[in-house]
Amino acid sequence: MTRYARRYSVVSSSDRSKSPPPPYSTRPPSPRWRLNEQSPLLRQRGHSGGDSKPASDQVNFHASHCIILLLLLTIFTAIFWYLYHIISGISTSHPYIPSPPPVYSIAIVGAGPAGISALQHLYLGSKNRGLHVNITLFESAPLIGGQLALNDSTGRPVFPYDDPDGIPITAEDIAGTALVWGNPLFTKTSEAILGDHIEFSERPSQEVSYITGDRIISQNVRPYSQTPFFRWMGLIFHYGSSVWQAGGLAKDGTELRNRFVDAPSTTDVIQLMVSLGILDPVQEFAQNGLDSRGIGGAYETEILGPQVERVHSQGIPNISTLAMMLAAAQEDYANAYVGGELIDRLEQIVAATGVTVRTATEVAGIKHEQINDHESKWLVEYGASSPPIREAEPFDRVILAAPNFDLYRASSIDDIEAASVLTYHSTHVTFFTLPSRLDTNDFGDVDQILFHDGQGRYDAFKGIRELAFVREVVRFVDGHTVVEQLYRALSDDDVTKEIRENLGVTWLYQAKVSAT
Image 1 (cartoon, rainbow, N blue to C red):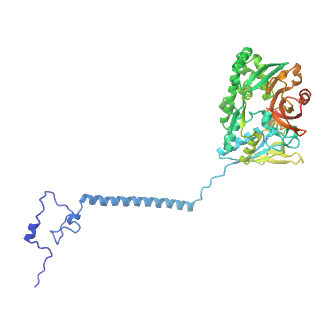
Image 2 (image 1 turned 180 degrees about the vertical axis):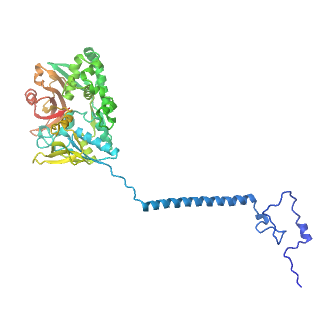
Image 3 (image 1 turned 90 degrees about the vertical axis):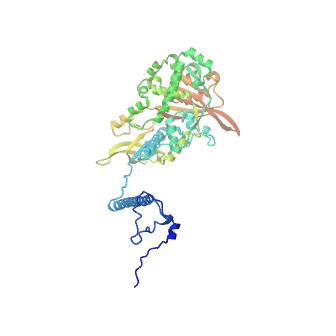
């Protein structure tokens, strides 16, 4: 009978002698080192030999795996939850469509510097506020530029000697070289629209003669800061402290103009004036402003008075302190715009804004009427001068920027009163050419002559406020080139007869313009 033999290894005494017993330890055996029920002397498989690991390492290994699995499960759950809400939201609701911005229609009557300035601020202001404006420019002349774009009866530019091969009369010839420089608000805004930078070149100093009665009262230098020392001392001796006080007046006027650049967008005129710090100068009479500054006496009537009349066509008693300060600044500084002419820049602005332009179109009337039960608009009636065809178009707002527009073409007395706050004065601008410069014995060797109540030998020029040298022009006589002098005269009335009879002109052209 075969006996069942237990399967375990029999270790001989010799083998034991070769493998000594493990050293004695007082630590209890690890619970993971459980003995096999069949082989109590052997350890379980996987814990023998040198491959065995410490128990703490095995616990950390399994715990890290659990943490990673939990993180992955959390991420996948969040992604699934997010996608579920997105998909369910699209299927159960309509997508959000923002409402379109409001649209306003605005008519600007007059495409001169004032009208183009209004266009610029409307364009940039609406763009910054997320609004949409449809702007229409109306100009009665065939070209934009208003009265500064001098045109003859046929709509062509005015050329000296009526020679189209020459250089036409420009806006700078009419208003002076400081035309663009004198409007920093227009300058900065146009830079924002065209994305360029306007540069100016400082013109050399100029001599100015001041004529009162029958003699030259004074010859000064502009700008004030370039007055030679001994000439300045002579003015101080004659006019006293009014001389340097007037220099401060011109400086303050320049600072006020620069302040207009940061004007806030508001329709509240009083708030606008307060924010710019010009409320007091606007409300103060110019005479009071002169008294507070210590400017008066002969300097006021002989120097400052002719400067103000040259700019505003009005005397000091009829204007505000603000107007006087701006006039003094304009007459003192003369920097020229580098990069072209004003009319060219106006055309660039109109092209960049993409507005609707209707040139050679006369606005015949403006009426405020009820369109329906909930809406009223301004009806602008317009049409070509010839043939006389009239159309009407509704607008939300109308801006009057044309000084020759009849303010009484309105439908109610309120409209008339609101528009009549602007008062315009007509000025005759006469261009003429001379074979040589004006007689230095009569007018001085200067580029500008300002008159105040001319008498005696200047009695023929009594209605003229300014005579100014503009530039040299070239004409052709019998196949030969002749260089002559182009002058400008500003007057309240027609002075063509006086100029022809007293100056021996070779060519003359006169236009009537309006100024505030």
